Length: 358
Image 1: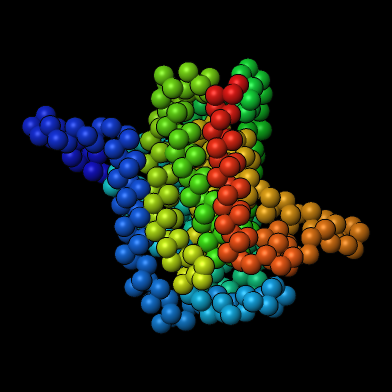
Image 2: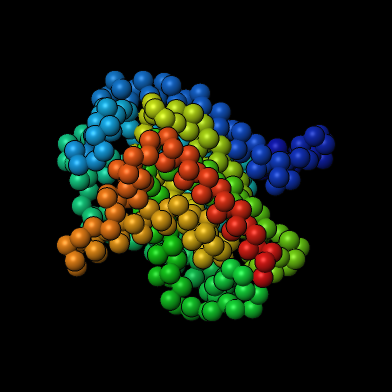
């Protein structure tokens, strides 16, 4: 909104000319979101404590986690607020793609809020049923996928990392593919959110990567140079990605070990959905497998564990998701978290290199 309000004044006040520069708005979106999250977190944590909205810890997990019983949760509400407000202030709100990302944040945020509410307030440990949660996610992702498919000139071809010309066109199958990307990423981030700071770290890393990817895809000169699809208007998504970066960084201050607050499903589900949505808009859906490699590893560990136990009666890991496997092997929680952060950073660097290695 600041772009629409202040940039027209640049003819009389040249200083407002800076608002036309995407790089300027990206930086200040990140700073705004960080400051909102950082300064609003303490009163929010206090309010969550007063409302007794504390995390319940499953009995079958590592015993040391029982000390976290009652730690305030649903801190993801703060992240969503900081991202939404910062995006509205610094993005060009006439951009359709910005609103699609906001829709994914709001829609999946409501699902996560309902799930957390049922778990904590209604005291139902499983939260929403798998069918309820999955059906709601599919409806929102389907709406986003249909908008993409029906947009004039939007390509249904895939951009494959490391390949210049290999770009299979999915046609109508692109809709279920987009749904898979958005819903899959949302639930993968959710599964990763099991240790203090574990999920938010890779989210910070992935948001930086997709801010860069969105900027490149929305700049014709850069896109042509890198031989990636040019998507008119996609560059504006660098602003909400910067807001995710800033808000997550501010939240990490309080979510780092030992955590003063957890984000809950109201944070993890929409953050994953937003990353998936930006991946779809920027036509770098498959790159998400690398950028979000930690999330993929966590989700795959759960899938393999369940399949192995149901088919053979044996477990592959001591406990899933895989971060608990490392804990059961004797790794201290901070060591697991920091090492997976390192993996996330390395995968981010590798993924960005694929934009040129084609």
